[in-house]
Length: 571
Image (cartoon, rainbow, N blue to C red):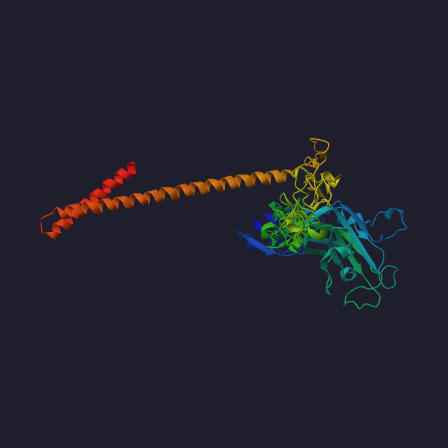
């Protein structure tokens, strides 16, 4: 504990990081105790325990008795809150007194009543006693951030060493449940004997503070430990810390980091005893590293979040949804049968071959489609006119009223056109039958099998009509009746037409030959006339100039031919 004095009148007590307000601390006494030279110093600092203040050589504190020491302790407690005063306390056993006046003298609550003259006491512990262990416990009423624990043991003024040996070996625990083994040890006493006025720093948090001690059989304890008939008497237990949750520091006014678990932090430095899920670090300021989440960041993300993003560092959920083929808030469950895609929001087509479930990521039917369907998802029906496996088969084209067949099996659901039978209408009527469902019989008057769709046929003599079911009329009773088939009539008509056509072609060709012959005869006459004229001109010519004659002859001959030819054309 550190004290700071100014003018030797006021003091401020600091217990670790807990600082009290200023209070009167010195009184003037005789010069044997008062050191005037030290009191004249402007600033004086002295470190000592509470009990040392009673015998200080620097100045006489306002604590010359145990009562004064209690007041000094009260002043010190202003630095941190007293969390245990007046709270519910209990102990493993209570000393029994036969005298009526001491019935409530050793209750567990005496250790938290704020009065150092009243103490709790348990029954004997030790090898020769029925009990080998004892405990005393106080319920603070809530979980608090704790700084220190002070214990004032009973001093019977007989033998301080014996009393210290009785208390030696004790332990202090903090817990949230009241069970010592579930908490954390705050203090474990060593081989040295504890002082009767004991204080220890116990930085932690909890609701219950437990004091325990033991004297077991066949255990060798350190020197100075009292073994037989050990009494534990606690006159005052002071648990100090911050009354309000979520604060720390000397004045309990600094907020704890926001991500501290239960909003409780180290009362001295503000570090968190534990972090909220999703946070880590001494001050819980860091998110869990990529791919991890939850309390102490010990849980690994499922790894199936959409877009390969990490899960929420607090909850482990995939905030943006799941990758294809996965579902649930954490995307750690595969799609149920018949669904696929991100978050499994799509339904399979149900048309995969062999009743195979579609692929949970894409929805594709990897084994193909059942007959009548096509496409990767097997959602698409066969195109009109096709059916079957992979839609590779064609309808017969003979469904009633030219409707398309069924896309799965090719069946004509409404029936067949005349002349066809079968589920797919791909079979013609048997010979001798025709019509709807091949239910009509061809006429026996047909020369051959009738057509399977309408029953038309060629008739035997004496019958007529498209189906030869009409008897032809007679000119006399003795004259035989013939019913010329239509095909014969058509054939005869075509034959006559072709003969007339060929005759006309022959006549035209003959006429052309005659005209050509006459033309050739005209050319011959023109040649005759030209030769005669040339002779006459040659006999009348007295000139011996032969070249001139030849030129005249050629000119006349050419003009004469042209003239004759022109006249011939006119004729």
